[in-house]
Length: 157
Image (cartoon, rainbow, N blue to C red):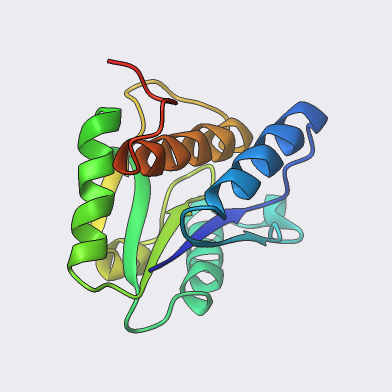
């Protein structure tokens, strides 16, 4: 199973880039992993909220294949603790899914087209985090999930 992680915009904080790189490298021991940063829309200040969401949605959907299982990281999604999330990963693996695509939307969320295409929504927290921090938090949780499945001593209960 391949994991693809889509996000809009670049990560530009050095400490976040280092953390993201750390977890990307750790994940490679467990799964095929690819992170895709979709460039920000140019002249986005000239667009309405809906126009921006549509353009961002179009860019997201260009990176999604018909057979992909698309998981939206969304504040209205289902919350999991780390153990339950590891079970979710295992269920995806056992179901034979070839590619799981996780995506972070833009600052206004996802377009209707992305919501319609999405297979499920997951929330990392009821709190709001910057998009750059969410990248690091999600990768850490993905790594934690795989470490739980592989009985590694990373996670403690």
